[in-house]
Amino acid sequence: MYTYKVAGPQVGIEQEIIRQSCNLIGYGLQSNGTFPAGGSMSNYMALIMARYVKDPSCRENGMTKPLVMYTSKESHYSNAKNASFAGIGKNNIRYVETDEKGRMIPANLEVQIELDIQNGFTPIFVNATAGTTVLGAFDPIDKIADVTEKYNMWLHVDGAYCGSVLFSDAKKHLLNGVERSDSFSYNAHKMIGTPLTCSVILVKDKKHLHNSFSNEADYLYQTDGDDFNLGKTSFQCGRRNDALKFWTLWKSIGSNGLEKIINQQFELADVARNYVANHPDYTLYSFEDSISICFNYKNIDPKTLCTLLYGHQITVVGFGDFREDTFIRFVTINATNTEKDILNFFTVLEEFVEKNSAILKEKHVNL
Ligand SMILES: *Cc1c(COP(=O)(O)O)cnc(C)c1O
Image (tube, rainbow, N blue to C red; front, side, top):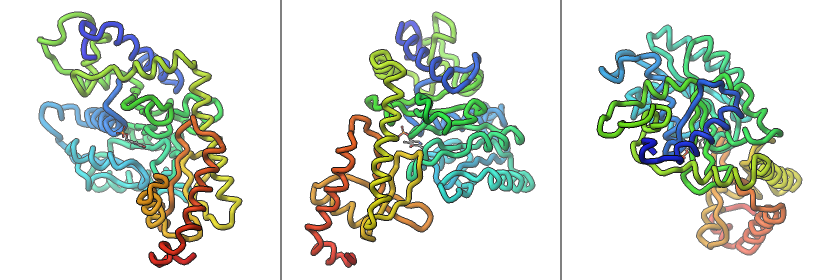
């Protein structure tokens, strides 16, 4: 995908997905983007652009000042890795407190920024999450943008998990304020269900992609303009045409079809959440507008239960934490499932517990 000479019309396919996506989130005509190797890489590219804005000689000389970045306690772990790769350092990430629903608290963000400025740091970057990994929470982008605009910092919205709500009229309000961000990413291989990998990063002003990712290479860039030589704005040199998987899906089912995929996942989540909420043997930890249904059953230790279900080859489900609680995390991201499939999951789990009460007792589980 690095040059038009090599990729030909595939360049147009990628650019078309990017253009349509930018339109949907309200980025203007200066916007563009690329297809990175995944959501972790999208977060990394955003951080690198933010670093360049505040320390433009860093590409030649290395960093010249102590930079700090901000994200919530519930954000993706790639933030920590990326801080280490970028030379910022893991100790220079500030993990902002979240509210009772797992969303970043903008007031706490601002307090931390003020503190860092007083201590001689340069705040550069906020990574907000649209769909946190465990709870599926959406950070309040509009209120966070108030802060990043005030302090002139880069705002990236990590929508790897749930940013695809941009295709749903019913759910896109969860991204309110995203048009004020500097960059936004989403993984079509998650909610949209394309084969791996299909990750998109959009940048409000494409000059930032050029500033951070272009490099002269006479042996490569011999024909056509920068707008068609996509290697000028990508991390990799050679890469697959990930956009094609998404393009064929979009062409075949249309925007309405994509919307149905998203809405179906939230409907299935409602089925699961209502089931858990209405059954006294369950404890619910999730909130509306999330496709992660977190729960416990009969106070059984969730790690024990998940491990037994896996070990006995019954079903594969994981567990997660939020604050002091650990729980089973059931994700309704597969839009080909039906209500019946979701309810069947609970039946299977309950029957397993019933049949294996002896093993669970051995594990000191109080039934
Ligand atoms: C999955 C996920 C990522 C990482 O995406 P990869 O494509 O697996 O690298 C980043 N952020 C969030 C919020 C995610 O859910």
